[in-house]
Image 1: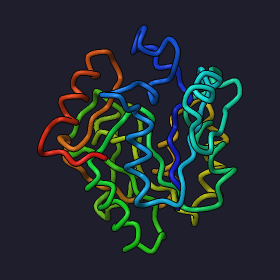
Image 2: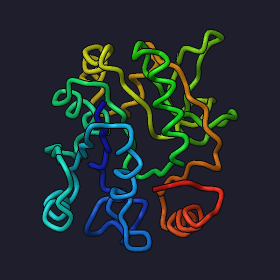
Image 3: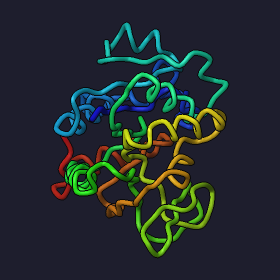
Length: 226
């Protein structure tokens, strides 16, 4: 399958840290988030594309990322448009990850193994267990099929998952109608199972305070992150 990193947004909550580059190109100990994400994805994919928008010229000139996809008029859309652009270009299973998260490599290995066990028949979406209503959430029924996503009471969306090639056309139709919304709306409307991951094996960079939290997470002996 192919890896896709969604990094078109401005990241306004990061303040001056994203004056020049999107969050995916913030550096931690000499490495960008993008570089770490690409290393995490490499064992499971045949290559990784990144969807850019905000400051894409700077990113292309300074970092020369592999297989960039530029979303024009990015400020008009949410990340549904980013994933739609990637799916139009990639006729394959897609392991998609938000440009502002890191996850323990063992969880991506579990994701790939579960997808293989399902023979690609279902999408998968990473979730953090425990009902909450402060962040976007996923819910599923007793059969284990995802039924809802959004600002609802549910299990926090962990920012990564796999969209099966088998459901690529349906996913594109859904995203085309929701360009101003978040891409995980695909999951309740196509056959999808959740993958539960411990919250200690996931970190998200949304605000300046998260930079130090991410550094501490990476330095922990309990974490395996390329």
